[in-house]
Length: 285
Image (spheres, rainbow, N blue to C red):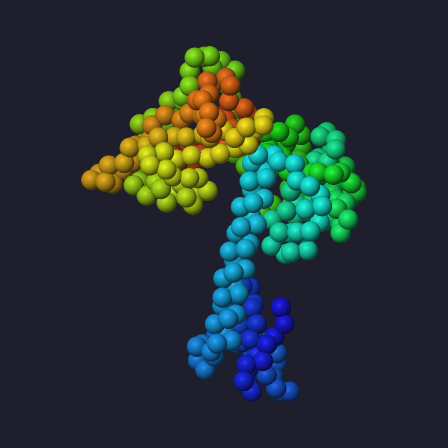
């Protein structure tokens, strides 16, 4: 943004998200001062700029959260919507370089631009910039990317930097030898973690409700919730994890073979993060 005059001696602006000031006048260097002058710290203009900076921070966080939800659930997003939000730097920062699928799921590409008419400019695995014109685009969860290893390698070659965990998101495959009658995973049961479990869960984007930590995924036309139970002993300052299970929201508990690949991966990712493990059994390279 530009510089706004404050009084006769200074101008203020947002620099790297913080209020900065510089001296005004024909002989000044134009460079921001190292600290905000005392005369400006309590001014109404500086206060309004601080409030704007706070709003911009919240807006950027909301954009990241929304795009992360699109990726987790592999939701088809209308390209007309992408065209409307792309000019906003916060939205563009969240979306740029994500792997996107148009009408052909076998041709993924890295999103580099969205035109005013909703056309997508993507870089494909051949290193070519191509133009796609689908009605909707999908930002897929990594378990839904058959070329995941190739995409990860190519992303490193062209210095892709994703603000949303997509390519390097931890993934877990559902084992093939699950018993049909089982409805819970017990491998995390008995794991003790610090009593700030709720803080750890919230920081990672999970929900805490009563004695459960949960995450939700939209998959196969339904909302599935993964939940891991915990018992918290405030005297010992520890929380003990219980079983991990999945259920349809407002519906039945799922048997383990019925859990979809995305819901399985996200549930295991949540439980592994809470247990403090660096990697999980079955995590993809």
